[in-house]
Image (cartoon, rainbow, N blue to C red; front, side, top):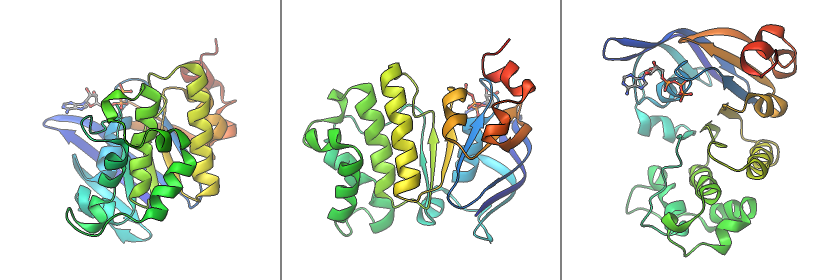
Length: 238
Ligand code: ATP
């Protein structure tokens, strides 16, 4: 599905990714773990076309290395960035409608009601709050909204950057269940970035460890969970 080879990314003279190879197969949840500053967010931004990068990125065998963010979304690769970034002054429903902009043009067709229904089914809390302004939502609700808005773009690949960040432990568990539901029930492959590496590996099929802009280790998630190098450095084992 998504295949990346020899990806380099730059912020001016800083090289944040230094030759990354990665593959996401259909139906998978794939996690990227790594320390702060390892390049995880940059990897998602590179796929989305919002940072300066070189290398080959193919999507269903099509070269998308030169695509910008709008072109990438139109291909079904949807990025839910770190930090929620909802539109605070818009209602929940209006925020969700913004997710369809890339599909239909700003003044184009109304979003399909069935898309909204799917999001409300996934996150019933958003239906309860549909007329409430986004700024007044709790952190967990804003995160649901950010993911819901991503779902409105009808993703064929959903990229989630730190969806559990800042959530209380109980909400973290719920968020992980929702990610599994999106993957299994809606059949959407997921590329996940998580600080919470233990939980992320539990729900993932495959995982990559990024270290200073390079892939240090990769493999089936259940193998990485018991890999001594990974457990020592990233899973809190001693
Ligand atoms: P974290 O877990 O802290 O979010 P990360 O693994 O997502 O970290 P990135 O945000 O991708 O890491 O950053 C990778 C490297 O690129 C870091 O050294 C960072 O300082 C640098 N970097 C990121 N964004 C910029 C920017 N806009 N300008 C300059 N350097 C940047």
